Length: 294
Image 1 (cartoon, rainbow, N blue to C red):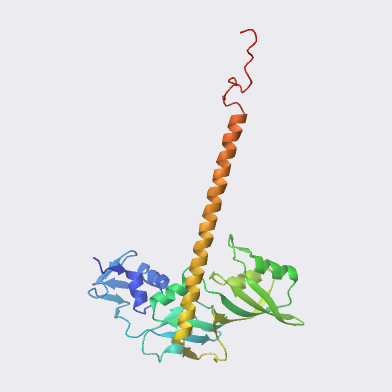
Image 2: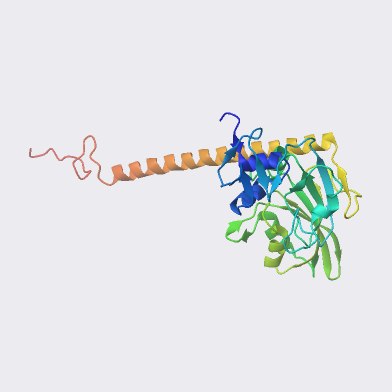
């Protein structure tokens, strides 16, 4: 049908959760469409189909909401936790519309967490090709060397894959601890903690202080505020810029690969000719004809 959309997109657009989390709900059998348990890949008509999640009817978003939450340490970045741990849903329970986290901060981390019910905005902030820079204030123990700073800056191999270059600078230094500012351009899970662990550093505190041009400022732990229209526009613009940069880099890499393949093909042809390919004025072994005595 012309109006059909992917089920995970519909759930995201209706403010249920992000597309990635929606896929997890579908795979777990918690989503039904017209009384039938949904499958990954299903499409729905948002107007006419009856969609439920855990038995609750999914309804269209009435008003798009964009929040900045100062997530305290000890809270899980989810709207529901089966182990009954504290989750960020408790901190926005007075919001009339259902909102969900954009990205994540682990339980022991704190700071700026975006929340929304706008699926397009959430997708723009979390899509692998559109990483908006994220800034963290990180306290590590016992200290840090120039070599360790360089490794974090140029990229490290974690779980078989090299991290993207990061911005790293020292903000404060005292006996037994160092405060760093780290800027990430990708969204790998627990990336800073994994990098520090690999370098033998203990993370004493990790706080996200900015996403793009949007900064946490003086917002207190457990409190939230609405993003301004300008902040939303700036975040979307930063996402679009990152997407263009990623596409340009991919195009350059593809062009370089084609150029290398073309050179390699030319080298193989040249080698073949030099090693005996018959040519004008030469015999089958590549030697000039000896016309004497013929």
